[in-house]
Length: 128
Image 1 (tube, helix red, strand yellow):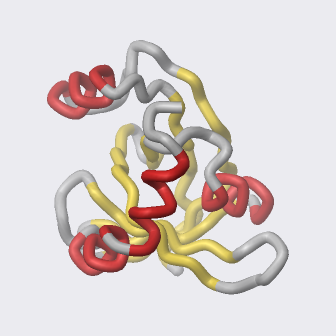
Image 2 (cartoon, rainbow, N blue to C red):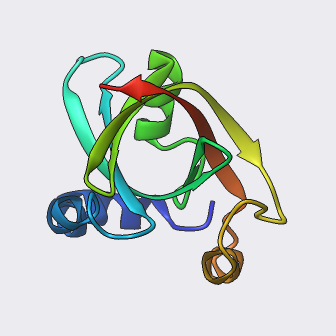
Image 3 (tube, one colour):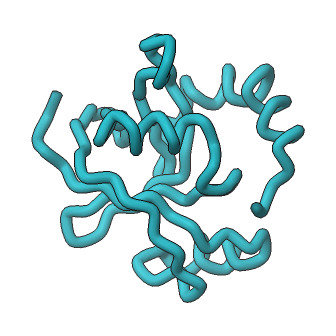
């Protein structure tokens, strides 16, 4: 896991509250809108997202066991807001890729530095 869980908790309390307002418009970023597995509560999680060949690939900077990843897998999809539009995504699958193929070169280098090799890949099902 590239980043420690304690940092994830701190981000949830502080940084994410700010960045989730910027992420829907910032290139390479987005906000995953998903429901809690038990509570059904709607959450908005800022992420690094890449599109290629019609697929959406999300870098799992806190690993594949993050609550939001488990929520999306359990739900069978989510919505993502990126570049000012919202898209419904389905068919989530976790992919381990040490080469980081499908990621732009700059982000590939940065994700390599922090040893991120797990990604959530989803397919669009159309606008929400």
